Length: 578
Image: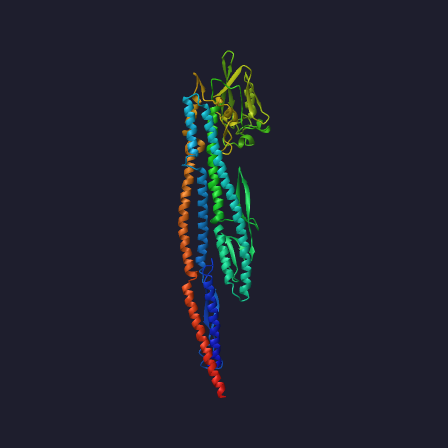
């Protein structure tokens, strides 16, 4: 080996040690940088031999490359774990909010108000002077239903805003990944290093994995494709984009996420966005639906009894609360095309009701039965609603009763007025049509959003129908006693449960889901911490280790400098001999 070869070997060692010192220094500088992956300078002997020496011992050392220390499989598992943990945390946050809105097991909850409401009716059954209390308690109960309904709607609106913000953020991240893909490909194709760009890209993908579950496929040029399930959302340097889609489903609006480029639905199964979508539909919408169902049945069952109630002083006029448009007045009430009735959460059935007319002057009574044909069978025996009862049929039948007249108010409500010198009351409504029409009702509204005590009843509590006519005459507390029994009566619409149990079950279901979400969140937190520890062991920077590397490269540099110095001295000696 010639002296010049020795100098070249020393020079290669100087260059390699300089790069090693730079890499170790960069690692130490980024010890606290989030998402930074430790870099390693890989040294390799320079291949070949000295063509001028038969006994060449080598040509020195070179840095083959500077690589990130990363486990791709572990990184993929961490991204999936991040999605699962983010989804569990988001679900827990929303479940906690729903629980807070329901407010059960507090001093001001719906269960307590239901108990107080039925207790007021029980007190009215024993105290004829407590009608005002019954009306006040009913008004308070309606207010509680509206308050909870508004709270749940507010949570759903918040979720909609969060979904919009999350999708917008995810869409921006896709653009960043596509831009970084282009930069990485350009840098590495030209022979440069793109480790810092790769770290930035991994950090963006980590942020994206909090929003949705993603998988990554790397290309030969260093770019990556990002997929959700089997749907690509980034293809190398091109982002396919994300957008929100809204669709009407009956009375509700469904929200979904799709690929903006071709409107393909995005089948995310984890991440914050998925949790928001699931919580919106499964948790919040279900809670609203159950609240409305309980409210609707409470309204309907109380109104069925109150509409056929009676007092010592009977009615001289009453108006329904249901507004019926002109075309719907002549359509059968069970016709799906009858919009006024089809939209209701309850319906009238085949049956009848009676109206009792009292002549005030002589005290004589007359009872007239009104048939309600809603069997869905035509006069020919075919399945059809064509011959069934219409709202106009009801009006005409009542208008034909001596002593009363029936008409529609300008806003489409059925109104019944007693002629001069007459009073009336309703009895034995097996069809429920009076409650559906809202005639002589206690509550107005059809759901938790609009449930309230009838306005004129609040203004004049003496109009409360606490009594009931029987074959033996007026039972002054008959209706009050019947209404007390509603709270524990089995209700077919609520699956055979009572109104109280229907609400209790809904609250318990939310509580169970919240507890499950909490357990899931804690379990996934342990998994994520474990994976992050594993990644830190592989990719994290150890200051102690880098300090040792720094000392090693320093020694290498010093040794290489000494080799060059010795070779130079020998060269100078050789020259001086010539």
